[in-house]
Length: 168
Image (cartoon, rainbow, N blue to C red; front, side, top):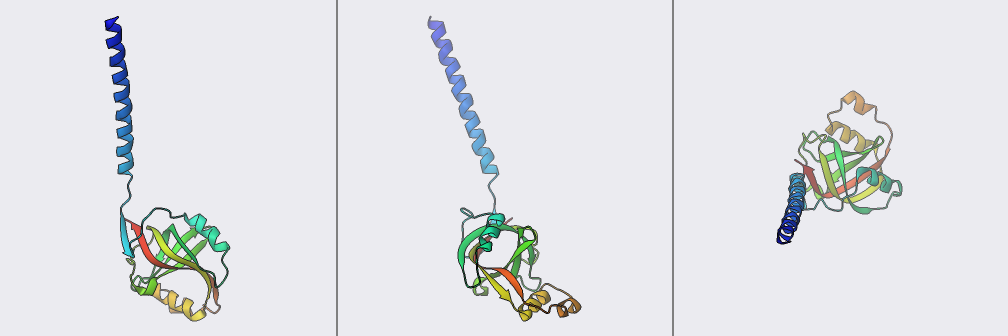
């Protein structure tokens, strides 16, 4: 009888120690998945950001003059090649949003194309004038010939970021 009790106690101890070892292992795996970010502008947190697809849906409900305070993640499609003073983010389905930085208070690295970012700030829609579109094209390094072809204003999904996190 005493041997059975000792055997049962040992089995229970082994069972619980294996269970705890597994729990510790999953915590370590989560720690390894932690993402490091470079921060630009105001200090923001990665938590509570929505996806680029969700942001695309939010833009569909905005009218010119509306503003939406929001945080979302998306890949950088293009960064200004002169000084990093704007970027375009890919929202999927052929849509993009043009992002500038609050009060030109910070800039992005000019080689950040393709990086994943989280932006915090104000989303809005606007009609970009021909002058604005030509200026952006010039900043992007577009040829004079292509710039001269810009003749019409364009409905634009826009964003003013006060803070940006970029995955390292």
